[in-house]
Image (cartoon, rainbow over all chains, first blue to last red; front, side, top):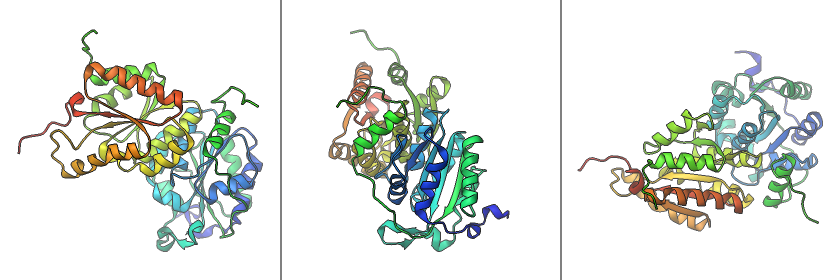
Length: 206
Length: 176
């Protein structure tokens, strides 16, 4: 087994720093989809961008949403922040992504080993030692890799911007809480995202 | 009105095209086979299978927000997996996610599981407040499918189209 597939090789990063690092490196162009709970809270706390979508329900669907965005706008990079518990609910979507092989899609798996938002209960994957990056590779996402530390995360994000995907980056996170919670106004979040994506061009009134 | 001579799936395919629906994620069904095959055969469409129906809903929601129209194909039992995804994504965010459901579990069903789950479909749609129409006649197929799709996009609301065995012939069954 190559070192890249070994989950415990990865250092546990402070969770809030991940979304901030991502947003700081990718600029304004790419779309970012934040999955349910802390994944989108982290994205919100990192500072709103016009091309952010914050998913407030539908646990497990951040990656499918990202796939839809990537298929609709193949020339734009699309990043998805998805938690380990969410991915466990919809693991089949990794095969769906691999089958479509969108060159512009990058998945960040935020793995803290717990259902953090409901009280930190360990996930079955944590209890069994399931390696989610190995799962992604076995599903056909051959570029999937764990980021060992912050420097490697930066390097991998840069690769996602210049090399064809689909990409998947596994991140081991600590259990620090999110800094803020997303404003829960789904139609407004959707409308802002659509305007950011150029899918709705009329100016807003007032 | 002229007598409709096209098969239901040819009508549906043309209505998809007329409404600019290009993205067709699906979990297959025997009854949908000719429609799925026709979508694959036409380069206008991007048609592909997903592992679960929820994924297909997520994909068409993401695509619509980025400017591409889509519709999910599935059968009754697959629809029954969707209430949370529909309630918290297209219903809450006002996204015109369209689902077309081949109706199993009625009018000659052999599978008890399908017959049971079929009873949940319309109550789920009603409780979600989702517009839904059942297509049972060839001469009404174009009108119902086209108008339901148009209204969904114009009102930014999800909607369901149910294909009755009266339209499609359903799945062939032997007498017990």
